[in-house]
Each structure stands twice: as structure tokens, then as C-alpha cells.
Length: 208
Image (spheres, helix red, strand yellow):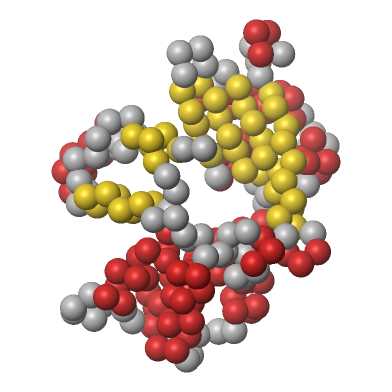
């Protein structure tokens, strides 16, 4: 499946569009319109891998310990701590992580970095349902409806038992103009393998 990408800024920030010199992504893209800048699309586990490769190849060194730590943590998180069974990591991701560890030996151990980031990513305590739905949100528009896909970082059972959930979903769809909302609940089982479950909600009778 291809992701349809439309690069734009909110109207108040539209002047920034001219400052975009390149778009980098790690999945195939179907463009709503041709990009006005350079486009780099490579099939890797983490977009941070593409950034790391670019910085490692730069003529003028710009990679320092702080930037390396940010890239290192992002690749580990996106690639589920380099677990092959999770189906995310590619040889390029693995090479970048190894290179960063070699150049910056002060980086924290992989498990420690991944576990800390994973806890932070999945910590939804204190968030309202609306905030949870906005945290990792993508939308697709068609002639009949706009479909929202929200990654929800808890089990589906816990999500469905949130107080006032149906009212919150209705308010969210009304506020954002969504005709259909797909909540993808993500939790982790043994061996850090992600377990996904889907819940579909629509305020429109045509989709019920």
C-alpha cells in the first residue's frame, strides 16, 4: 500500500513552504501533487536512518554526540530495538546503529535506551481521549469521507473501557470533520513484538 502525502503548512505558516529544500521518507509515497523540492524515499525501518547516512557522508562533519543520541534512539524505537521478528529493521538500519555506537562509544546500551523511550511513548496517563487520538494521527480524504487513523498506545480492551468514550469519539470526529475513525490499539507481548487491534467508529449512518 502507498501512502498519499500532501506537503503543506497551515495558512499562518504558508511562507515557510519556500524554505523546504528536501522531503525524506522511508515508505513509498503517492503524491497529491509533485513536490517543489528534492525528494528522497528509501525503504528502511526508520527515517532517522536516512538522516544518519546523510550526516555520516557529509563533507563537513556535523554529527556530534547530542545529534547522534537523538538519531540512535529514534532508530532503536522505530525498529523495535532491532528485533528481526518485529519485521521493521533492515540491514541499513543495523549498519547505522553500529556506526553510531562505534563513533560515539558513550551512547547508552541499546536496551536501556529503547526501554526508556518505549515507556515514554506508551505513557498515556493523564491524557484525554482527544489527546490520545491526536498523538499519532493520519488522515485520508476521498470524495465520500475523510478517514482518520489514530495509533492508540494501549490494549484495545483498555481503550474501549475508557469512561465516556463514545461521546469523546463523536466530539473528535465532529471537531475534525472525520466521517470515519479507525483506532489502532498497539501493545507489546513477548519478545517485544507489537500486537495490533482495530476499532472502527463513525458518526455517519452510511458507515455503520
